[in-house]
Each structure stands twice: as C-alpha cells, then as structure tokens.
Image 1 (cartoon, rainbow, N blue to C red):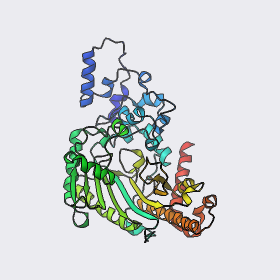
Image 2: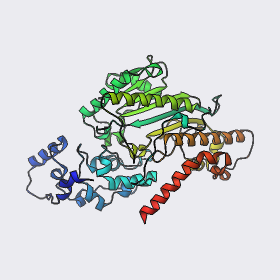
Image 3: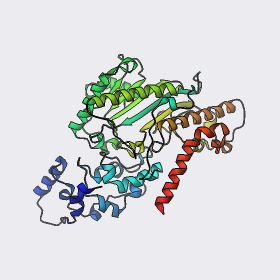
Length: 448
C-alpha cells in the first residue's frame, strides 16, 4: 500500500517554466528538497513530458530504459520515499552513463521502500532479469549440511585455482549506500566495526578505515582483490561515491597485511556489507561453512545492538542493486579450461548449466587466458544451497570435459547442451528444475 504517499499522487498541478516564480524561490526549493523539508511536488515545477529522460538508442540499452515509459514516468516522478529517495535518484546511474555490459540494470534502489513505491518499474525489471513475479516467494537456506555433494572438486588444484563466496547484506531501517546521508553511512560503519571487533577464533582480525589508509596500502589491497575499487563514473552517478572515502572500510581476519585473509568484509561500498570467504583450491564446502559462520556471528552482533539484516519473504535479502536480490550471493571458482574454452558453444553450455562466465579478473575482463571466473547466474528464487550445488555439478562436468579433451578425445559441445538429462545429475537438479517450471507457470498465469 502506498497510502502514506497520497499527498504526492493527489497533487496534480505544476508550475510552468514560464511562471513568475523567482530564482530565489527556485534555489530555496532545491535546498529544502535536498534537506528533506520539501517534497518532490514542490521541487518539480516541470511536467513529466518536459522532464522525461533522454535515451540514446546507441548508448542507453539498460533494462530501466526498456521499461520506463513516459506514462510510467508521469506516474512516478513526483513520488519520494520517507528517506527522500525519488525516481530520478534510483535511475541516475542509467541516465547518466548510458549502457555498460557490466551495469545493464540502469537502476539502483535507494532504500527498502523504493521496491514498493517504484514497484511498477522495479517489478518489471526484476521479472525480466530474474524471471520472478511480484507474487513469488524466495527461499533461504544457509545450512552447509544440506549440500548433497561436498567433495573437493580438484584436490590437487590442477583445474580449480581458487574458490570464493560473497553475500551482500543491508542493515534494516537504514537507507542504502546510493542514497545514504553521511550520518546514516557512519551509523552503518559504527555498527559494523563494533560487531566485527567482537569476532573470535579464525574469524577475528582488524578493521581498516579507508580514510586512514595510505595510497600504497590502498593500491596493494585492490591489486590483491582484498579491497574494492575506488569510484568510477558508474558508481559516482549511482550515488555510491559521495563523500568518498568517508565511512568506508574493509575487515580482514589477519593482523599482518602481508598475509592473505580468507574472511573479508567490505563496509559501505555498493552495499552496507559484503561478506566473503575465499581460499585457494576447490573445497567449496569449507568456504561456505566459514562464510556462514561469519554471517551468523555478524547477525547475532547486530541483534544484540537492536538491528538486523534486511530480509523479506518475497525478495529474500534486500539490497540496492536488483541483480543481487534474494541470496545476495555470488559463489565463484577460478577454473583452468584451456582446451574446451576455445571450442564453439563454450559460453552457451555454461549458461545452460546456470553458470556465468567472466574473465579471470572479473566482470570487465574480456581477455582470453584459459582461466575463467565461473559463478552462479541466478540470485533470486533459488536458495544458497541450491545455487552452490548447481555450481558444483556444473564445474565438475566442465573439468571432466577438459580432461577428456586433454586425453585427445574430440569434444563437440553441441552434444552436451542437454547435459541435465544425465541420470547422475537428474536427482541433484530436480528441485531446481521444479522451481523454474513453477515460476514459468506463475508468469504465464499473471500475463493472462
């Protein structure tokens, strides 16, 4: 229900650009709007037709651009959440930067309320990206014991070089980083530092604030993939680079930075928290188990301080970028597949197995070196256990194909597009396939 915003939707008049409103009043409206004392209706003196974003067909190809029609813009552009987040705030990353393969959503929610107030746009984007309807429910399962296959995929590390799982989390009741004022951002950092300092055993370590970090340390941690990148044009237009580096930091479970941590927490980058565990080799069970222990410890720490992670039955763990809704999880392995990766259909086969393929150095790496970052394509509508199980099965299958190619067997990847029909894998995939079928039925029913 949007009853709290009735005053916004019922206000239909607007002041013409040619009216006698003084420049002093215009400036006062802007200042008061940004401070939260004036609502969006007072600020927007222009009609929706005059204010509708310009989209260049060559550069603006995001999901936001595809779904934000003039009529939808007219319905939403004067609304604002209780935190002051407007439609133009959440679409700024898609209107300013145009299209980026790595950032094809074109939208970044500013707070939890954004998903309700701007639902006509965000529901369409979520439906297309995740194949997930507004009436669907997400399932969460963070119990490592529920994994059906927990073996180390590559005990000798001949193919799997490293394994990493990260999850994104928001602190309930606080705006997301793209729209967070300084005070709220500092509140997230204070809460995080307090909870992280209470970690014990193999999770214990130290917190490194960005604003106290020298350039050499900053560059070194980025190069070692321990720390997030500094802002680029996309993160700045999305609102994520404001006041940088104030109230941002990284936690590592080592005391000496020359050592490599295997438990890392990013604070106030794209999400309030990004919690990750990473290790050499392919023991994904050990990585998942340690990650879950860390997540649970932080959740207990927040609860003791009167806070919790933001979660609901529909969207699962709720964060700013719609791509990360649901599990908020990206489980990945760096895998050496020199032979089969050169064959036609390699990426298509990975896609059919529910895997996303990136270069060794992440989503912006297009170089071919025979080493790939393979991860779960899905986030929303499937549990953490289901997605990790899917990745285990998929990576194991690719390694088997690579071994056969190394032995001289001629591999035609077109023969493996229906790999899920393999009897051994059928049982492991049944739950996942039933969910896909159920979601398709729901979508067809809603479209009738």
